[in-house]
Length: 302
Image: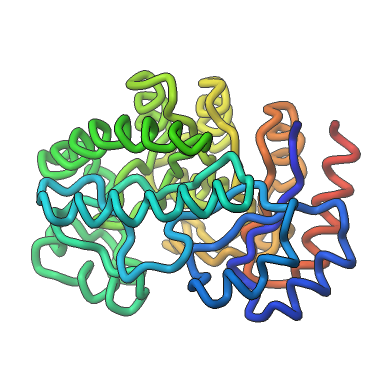
C-alpha cells in the first residue's frame, strides 16, 4: 500500500515531531540519517507503528557507507554501519532502507557536511569540477575511468547489501544522487542499469536530485523520471524542489518546498502516484504546508 511519508530530516525536537504527527495522523515517517541514538530513543514512542522507511545511517554514524571503495577497512566499516541501519528498520517495523550507493574514492566519507566538503575539495577531485559552488562535476564525469571503476565496485557490493537487508526483512532502496564530484549514480541510465544486476536491488527516486541532473546533463526531466519508474523497482520517492537552472548556471540541492522555483510538482506527483511507491516529503521547511499539499495532490490523482 502506497504511504504518505515525511522525512524527519528537518525536525529538531521530539516536541515538534509529536505536534506534527498529532496534526496529521495519516502520515508515516522516514527516520533520518541525522538522528543520533539519543534522539532516536527519545522519539521512539511517538513514531511507533508509523515508520515507513529509514535513511541510512540511522542512528547517525561518523561516516556515510562507501560501497564504491576498494579499501577493505572502509568496506568493513560501511557494512557495520549499514547493518545498524537495517537493525533500526527492523526495530521500527519499517520495510525500506534508503541508501546513498557510494562514492568515487577509496576514502571513508564523513557524515559531517563541512568535513565532507573539505574532502571533496581534495586535488584528486578538482580536475572533474565544472562549477566550484556545490562541487558540480563536468557532464563527462560518469564516463571517466575513475568514475566507472568505483561504480563497478559499488554495484558489486550493493548486491551483497541487498542480501544483508533480506535477513532483516528490509528492502534496499538505492537513491540517485546529485551531480557532484565524488558522487555515484547520478543519471537515469545508471539507475536502470543497477536494477538489472540483482532482483533485490530497489530504488529511491529523488525527484530533486534528478532535476539537478537534468539541468547539468540536458536530458528531458520527465522522460528520465518515467524511465526510472518503468523499471518497476521504485519503492520510495523523495519529494522536494530546488533553484537549479541550467541557463542561470545554478545547480543547488536546496530541499525547498514542493511548490517553489516553478518546479512541476503537480505533474511529478500525478506520475508518481501511479507507481504505488511511498511518497516522502524531504523538504527542510514548512512541513505542515507541504504535507497539506501532498495530501491534496495524492487524493486528487489516485
